[in-house]
Image (cartoon, rainbow, N blue to C red; front, top):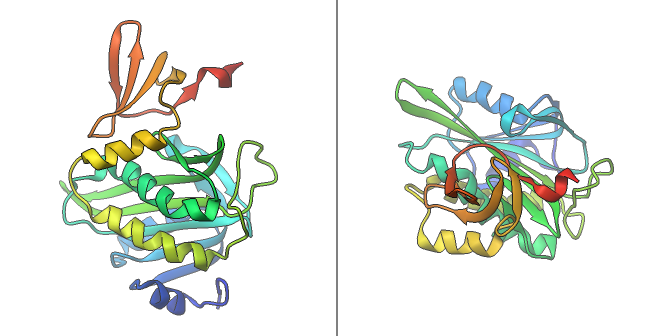
Amino acid sequence: MHRVDGFTANELATTLGLPAAELYARVGSSMDEAHRLGAAGARSGTLILADEQTAGRGRGGKKWNSAPGEGLWMTLIERPESASGLDVLSLRLGLRIASVLERLAGSLIEIKWPNDLFVHGRKLAGILVEARWRDQTVDWVAIGVGINITAPRDVPNATGLKERYTRAAVLSVLVPVVRAAAALRGPLSTAELSEFAARDYARGRVILEPTNGTAQGITPDGALVVRTEAGYSHFRGGSLVFAEEST
């Protein structure tokens, strides 16, 4: 029976107030396991946690190895009553995760649109949200979160938390805010937009992707605003590439 920080799956689920947890020593991707369990009828709030991922997924199909002992690699299944808010869920998660991880990181956590958390210019965490649909109704949502507890040895632009916290300790502050964000509906509020502005990693910086221009924040529906030579443009997809990264 696999354990995490001494907890069995049932003990960890009970401690976190979740209906179920699935613990793995090694998987390809916790997201793939979440979709498998979702299709099998897993309840909302089911947690999938892996010591190691050999084919972890990011946006755009990017893959990476998530080494054992270096971080928290998890996916949470939710079954929302409507699709309202799904288009901004990644940003909502970023805001709430940043607020609770900040004391564990010991520094301001910034958000790189649409789904990465940075500390002092180095990546601390990433978020991936994938929905599965039945006809025109959302069936389940898989919320993937990867957090570097220690700075990865082979990733020069990454960082970790200020101390080597246990995964159970990180989960205790993380899970409640993830579930709270998943329960919200509608576009980003004025307060959420204000908080994003205070954490915006890209605002005022020259970018090359998703277009040439200067990042100027986001809209209530989560679109990136870019000032270009032709005026202002909004982008709902793509990834940010900064001009200085190309030199």
